Image 1 (cartoon, rainbow, N blue to C red):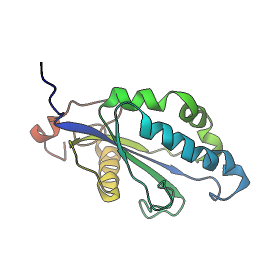
Image 2: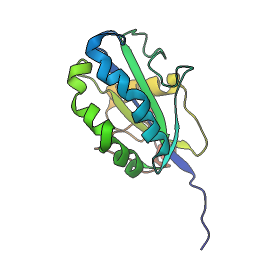
Image 3: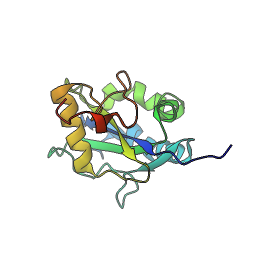
Length: 161
């Protein structure tokens, strides 16, 4: 049996609105955890790519025109690989403390979508997917872990669905 490269990979974006400036004492644990958590992500089975600026992370990448928002944009082999990373280790510990670091937002802050293998989405793509999810709920164009769609379904469905 021969291995074939996947046709699609899973892109994910999540945003968060900071409660305090990144250089504040209140966010020290979060900021101190960025490099170790990113290193674990980078080494995780199924990890493909993540957005980073010259700082090595993406906390200084603008998103949705809001200076208090930070963005995480990455690509994974599939939802199983993403969730395996999300809910283990130091990422899980920081996730459990998210209300200390970030404001609670009522609208969707995470969106997933399938990209052709090898494609690296831009922040504008991520913003578009997140705004689409907020406007239309989960569709093949932008969905959630709780309401997933299979790779390739988007091609059969109109973007405004």
